[in-house]
Image (cartoon, one colour):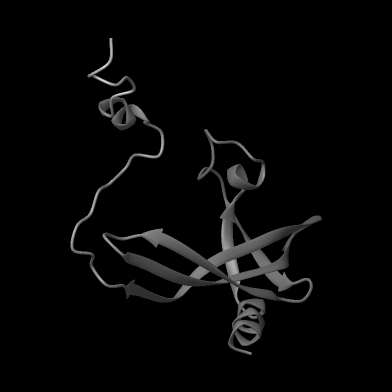
Length: 127
């Protein structure tokens, strides 16, 4: 509801954009007279929740929860208009899940199997 309310509030506001920016020129982006531009919502708002787990230490995992919001808005300028997708990932919560710390610990790299070469492959008592 709050997102829809904010989109309705945007509809009542005008933004000033320079003609150089409207033409798409990076060199003249802020050059020339400014035009009033209206922004209107052009569809529904989609909201999804996503989670992310990240290693945060020995038997610890960081859990992040995001709200992924996306919608379409229409930018209306004199003699033209354009619909664009607007999206944002908003952090909702973050916590660290703590497990028991073991008595001993070894960190084995995922990409490196060289630690296995310390184990003898031949019987030292045989010739």
